Image (cartoon, rainbow, N blue to C red):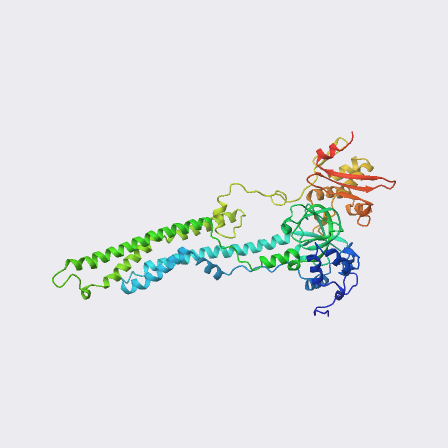
Length: 547
């Protein structure tokens, strides 16, 4: 057992987990990243830097973790999981209680509670006295349950949808020397995380840069600084919740979940924060209308009560004025006051529109069901009213409106166009291999394999044999073309000096950016000099070509 009572295990390099850096040491490393972070890293690793820290954590800068379930679970126990405790959705009774706080419903309940006993005790026709207040109670019951039931179902559906989205939000880590797609929650301390400015831009955890090319990170969400911050060996600390805007690289994960920089902020600020209970614009207006109607109804009820008292009690007393006076307290029929009060309450009850909340909630519930039929999930009923005012909905295309999967349909080489639709018997890749000179086909395959990101790769499902795309869909389509040509893109990358991980220092990548609109990778040639492979926007690449 370790000092903290947890089982001690061996890391991938044989190191005992008791000798690993402690969680608090790694958190301090990130907390002091702007001032003494490099000094702390040097003291912790003896000047060995990020690669030494990876070794101390039982990992490897080149091959990452082993991926064994026992090791991953042990790391989650020691360093925490890259996930936060989900807030449980409200129970049905809690939703009912929230619905009962509506001002209109409270008003109806008070009126019904006052009217029912007074009518039963003092009303003239006690056989029908219960109908009006019971109708009010029934209206409130229907309104509350319609609203609560709809919100209850939608909250559960949203929780299920959020779980599916979390499962589809994948990152790429290096385990057993191979790139592997995992969800954010599966990332652990010691993992080697691959990132780039295209498909893997968001950083889900804290880390120390192992290698990278022209890496710049937008930390404005954390620091407020608008300019992207370059990440190098002198500034290697990458913070969770920030976005990579340029370049690509790999980093060693050192803090996850609530122990990361953004995680601690989230836990301190948002963890126990209640949801915003601000009323929607429609219900604000409805509450205003109901209050105005209630004021008018109350004024009418008071006026009726005073008028009936004046005509039924005061005026008859003055008509009987004689020598003994105009007012005999004992002869006043005070029970008439109860009757007058019941009449006033009835006037007030009639003035309050008890059917209005019911009509609104039913209309919104019907709208949410119609939107659900069109695959638009509405979490709260009041969202329907604001969606009705929307005139334009903006959405990204790739992966949302399309399947996020592309294919190469045509290739133009040396003035000749080769099309996938031109030959139904042969794939486009086979056409290129058979019709192009061998050296030219080999050069084309090299271009695609070298000048694509490590995070773009093909994954074959062993059960079905289907090929899945991982990473940038455009690059995956090109890699799929290389596979059709009979080449192994991983082998070509590994065998090319300046492109493989072991010889990366001999080459120089220039990653795609919106300014350059192209990606280039320079690799050394056997006889000296360099060859630069390029891909990008046609007008940019062609403009740089010679005659």
